Structure formats: structure tokens, C-alpha cells
Length: 286
Image (cartoon, rainbow, N blue to C red; front, side, top):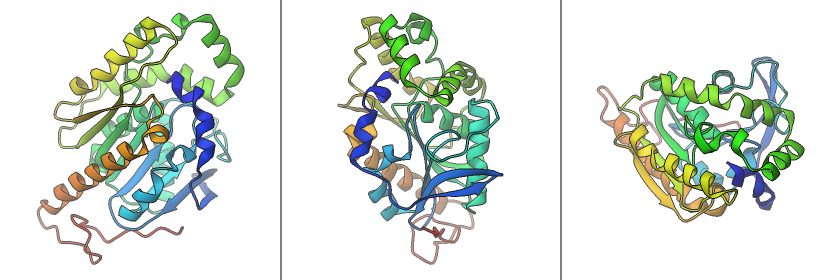
């Protein structure tokens, strides 16, 4: 998670095209919507990150299907929300946006870092709305336990975080443990394909924190039995450092989702010939 803040400057190298700000659920939300076909790929950013973190992944994704990237409340041009910044509210706000843009489930959910924790919550709470889950060096439900507890961070890191982060980031971090425990309290649906990308490189904050991070990364194989876990020679910022790994994971997730849909009773291919797209192809307004 620390690496997200330290490498955020890299995100300025590329941008997601076609970004607009429209009302959804009585609040202005900045987002990009492009491509056509089903299932819809939905991107969720990490702590402190904006939708341009997906800029290197976006072009391939929108060639494959419909894709939505957005900024959570309080990020970029997205209007702040008075609701608590915990995962339960984030998930409901995302579902409101998806409904406002008339994007039907099931979705392929793609989340990086804290965004991965939010997408885990979405998938566990609404498994019927999820075709596949892609976790990109995701936050673990117990991330704030053990050496990951901010109280145990080195003094310099605490100070840097305090001085360089916005109020919404601090609010999301404060709610992170509660979000993680909510995720842990909900069952995993074994029918939802899960693809996990884990970074091989560790944060340099302290040996204890590095060991804690690696243990939690490895534990995703136990959190999601039957998942596909790929270790990537990268730091935490995989979407920027190794976008090709994310592109491949999304392709694999789409293939699994479409195969499952094609095998469903009464399923017929869509008019566009998309494999496993049992509903009419979704077309964006972007």
C-alpha cells in the first residue's frame, strides 16, 4: 500500500480518454465508459489513486468488452459524499453508478490495492452480480492487523502520510480495518472465478512490514481456494509497472466468465458473436 503513494507520480505518464462527470445517485461522479460487449469490466482504484492508474490497461480492455473506470467520492472531480468512507458505502455507490449508466450485471470486477478489498466485498455481498474477480496486489482483509497496523509504522512514514494525503484518503484508511472484517465475515462463492496478481517486491519501510506484506500476499491462495495466483516481478504499482500482467488477467477472467455463461442453460450467443455473452451486447456512450 505504501508503494501506491510513493509511485503515484508515474500515473501522469498516461491518461484514460473520454472522462466525463455526470450525476449518479444525486452526486457528480467522474468516470470513463468505453467499448462494447459483455460482461462489463469495472475498475476500482487503490487508496489515494485515481482512474488514470488504469491508463496502460484501458486500451486493450475496451477492445475486448465494455469497461468502466471511475473516481470514488472525494477523488478528482467526483463530488464528496457525506456517507462514511467504508467499503459498504463504497460498494453501494459503485452499484448506483453502474445502474445509472445502465450497465447490467454480472461484472468482471478489477481492483488494485484497497480497491481490491472493495471488490472482494462486492463479490462476497453480491455474488450473483459478479462474473469474475481480478485482484491486483489487493489489500488483505487483515491488512491492518500485525505489522500492517499504522501504529507500528516507522515515524517517518506516519509523518509523510499525515502531510501528503487528503482527508478522504485518511477517512478510507481509518475505515479499512472495519471493511476488512466485514469482508472476512462473508462467505466466498466458489462459482466466481478469481484471478490474483501478487507483487514479488516488498516495501522498504521496515523488514517487519515487508515480511507481513508478503505473508498476506501469499495468503490469498487460502482466502480463495481454486483461484489462479500469479506472482509478478513488480512493486505494488502493478497497473503502472507491469500493465501486461493486468491485461492478461483480465483476458483470462473474461474467457472464464464467457465460458461459464455459454454453458448456462438456455444461453445463446449474442448478435455480435461474443463468446458466452448471453445478454445483448452492452454499448457505451463514450
